[in-house]
Image (cartoon, rainbow, N blue to C red; front, side, top):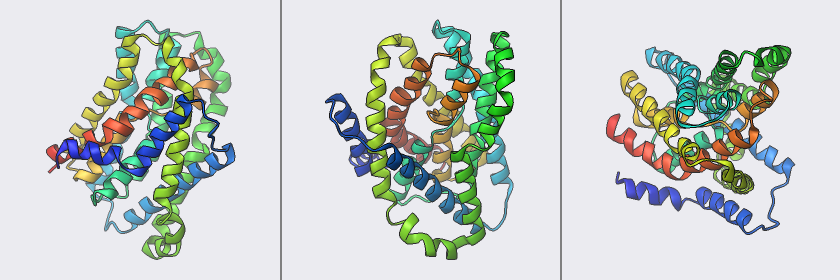
Length: 328
């Protein structure tokens, strides 16, 4: 498929246009707002829908084969090791202090649920199938990056250990009982247990309204991004550039691993998106707790105001075009 056509289709999809509308409304200082409780409901719905449908898809998979296990291992390895690469690049190209650089690095080993959901929606619009077990990889890649970020911070600046030791039990509990991860995994298991009959019963709630709710959620995300843009004045050019080339490096790693494992185009593209993503929900919450010395005004807008829009607008069609070229 022609890459210009993919970019055009992505930019003209209702969900992406609503995302752009949210950013525009923020620039114009409009009073347009999505109430916090509704925003929370939208997040819950999307995690429930993507988890449940992923579970149904894996229920239809005949067996847990070598491909599934290889992808799980690859996802865990990327989640754990990619922050080390990100930290090294940040120290070479920027003057960030060690705790902030470690916190930023943790974001780029983790994943973005919304980027994943948007990519899955993009595949559905282009009638490209993917394996349901990729949702399990999504859930598994969150925690390793957080632990890597903390390990890097401790090695680079030992004085952070004492403060974090006090937070370790609470942090571990936050990671493993995090509402987003718990709902995602729980919905996945329910979908796996109930299979296609369960999906038929839930179709009117989890399938038909999905695109509309995704569009409303991305409108809210656009508003959130616009509120973070003023922090970009604190960025150097090299730091802002990192928010663009780091996801491209992650995507390259994802594509190479997808090729080695032998993933199909749809599954490989989604695995690539996971490797290219940067967290802006779970990891910031963990870093605020465990690394209070790190500058949130740097790591939050870097993932939310630079990498997230780049992946949504440019990354998804680009990664799909590359997956089509390399995985067929």
